Amino acid sequence: MKKTRLLRYVTYVAFLLATTCLAQNAGNVGIQTVGPIPIFTNATTTGASTCVPGNCVIRSIGQSQHTVRYCVNQTTASVSAIALQLEASDDGTVWSAVSDLGTNIGITGSNSCFYLPGAPGYYPMLRVNVLAFNFTAGATYSVSYSGAAAPSGLPGLGQNLSSRQATMSSIQSNALQNHTSWSETASRVNPAGNTGILWVQPQVTNGPFVYLDKLIVSCTAACTFDITTSTSNGTGCATPTQGTNLGVGLGGNTSSQNVFDISTCGVAPGQSNTGVLIQPINLAANTPFILDVSSIVVGSAKGVVVRNSGALTGTITATLFFYER
View 1 (cartoon, rainbow, N blue to C red):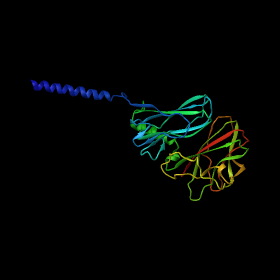
View 2: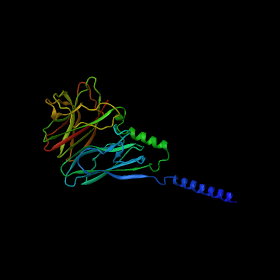
View 3: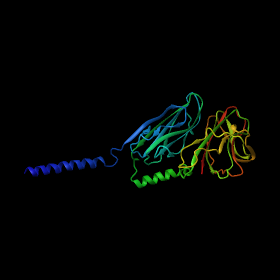
View 4: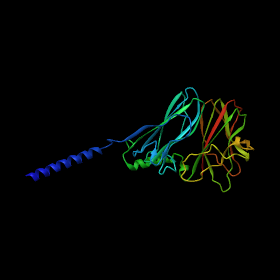
């Protein structure tokens, strides 16, 4: 009799434990979340959030849903450009973009915020990289990150992977095929008409091919800019000091010397007034403009010049994003 009772008791306890385990894994009950985690608060400098093996601001709980929220405060100042992205890594050394490029296009108020979604999927290490922040004194930005262990409403792993693949295909696809992604920024104060800002030199023999991507231009006063071909090479141009490896590529060079701030050149490249590639574009004051320049091909005979078209009393800033292969 005692053995029978003991057997019944053990069976009952085992049933309760099994039921509890099933309940803990039913549906989306108990999905873990992380954040919002403050990444940058009232910041003014560029750079990436800390993330080395064992020490990352964005902690990993196995999350596969990612959202970056960034806010620009220009109550007593103005912001001409901000650019940031979410990046992932397996080792803390090689970083790849897993979001589109977040900018301040559309900011109209003194303090505006935007949400930047990341490509769904698990990444061992994550960081936010602020690539550019051009502003007048008093302006700041703040960034936070939120994640969830599983995207809500996603029925299966196959759809998760398909969604991730489709998203990644639209995010700097060239840079994810052993390319290297870069940016170069230059400014001019009170420039005269047809003043060159950035120069993409012609294709260098045995050098990487340069693929242009996006151009962000902003001015502190109403201005006009265009893009033309160069008629002669600049000489004595300093190695780019603002050139930035965006960390998107999986390989390639450790530095880029194909796009130059023309103000550093001993002799500026010649500019064509008849071979204009992009006709003059008028900008209102403090209204950043993003231009897709991926259709412009940099050949072996002619380079490309981004220039201020008309005389300007104020500052014009241009940031060019490009890939090398």
